[in-house]
Image (cartoon, rainbow, N blue to C red; front, side, top):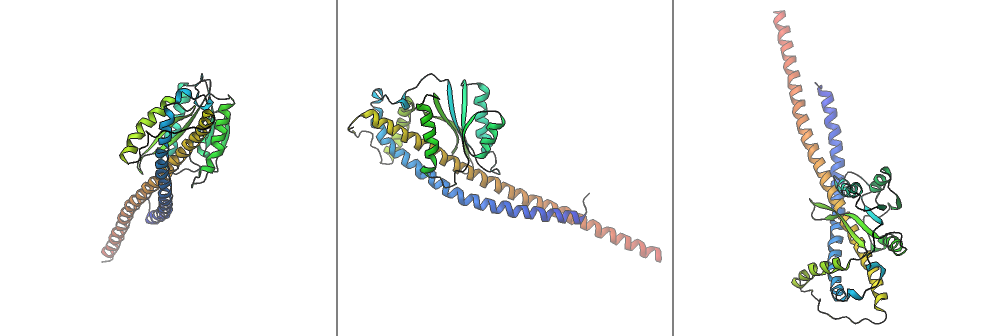
Length: 299
């Protein structure tokens, strides 16, 4: 059994750890607030942008842009979004599990990876997957400019015919307590998926008074040139939104992990304090017994 000195040392150590986890919790909470605000603001922008796509979707049969044309899938490019740092609960493990399941099931003949975040990069190299690019310096306050190299690389590789599909593995932000790992196709821009998204989002826009699906748009010049430019922007916006979702999820997961760690530290301190008091009481009782025994032997 530990003596009182060892218990006091352990309590002191746990208190120091609690200060660190509490500070990290507060920092993560601050970052989460900014990340969630950016994510929700971007969602609103994305929903309003579907007003234009609603009109364009009526003419998807005429679209010949390569980014809209599906072809036989032989090579797949996966953009794998994780964090640079740990201490964020199951955030990385959840999305990694979903990605590893695709590899295990051999859904696609060949999958190469673009990693965003050091944790995903380490995992992919450890299991021997080909990583064609790594982006490990993405800041917490993500801007659309930070996403351009990723979206440009993925669209260029697709247009060159090196890959037949581009997927993004990321984490959807649901709430501070819930984050949902997801894998979505961004290239080719699926016509059917586009229509489904428009049908799903348009009623919500109408409820908010932002409907505009019946607006007719006139196209000047080559429609396919315009559509191709728009498709690239759609891909960029989708990747940007997924990065924002992942960032909000990471900060939320880290905040909850540090909160749980702080609460666990408090419980451990309480338990050790109780043990310390028992040991001290036992020592006092033993000393009293020894003194009484000594006095008895002298009388």
